[in-house]
Image 1 (tube, rainbow, N blue to C red):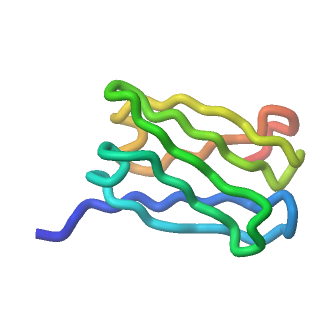
Image 2 (cartoon, one colour):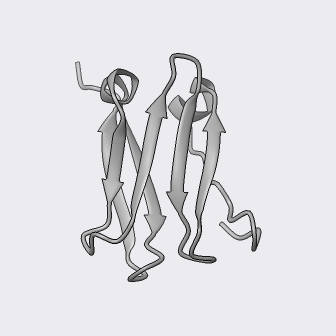
Length: 90
């Protein structure tokens, strides 16, 4: 049986590159995950506290890092798109 995977992505605020990487659900629940841009100047992070996923997402629109908290149902089923808190754009 194949491991269930989740893909994370963001626009790097430093270089403008689209950054994407997949992590297994098991790995997300077991430890922190980080998706770093190849330029080394930004990284998306995911932590799980046993009840909710906490994300810190670099924003290619406003240049800030936005926090988000998602329940497992939102993170593990379907797709979730988060918008920039300043511009309202995805």
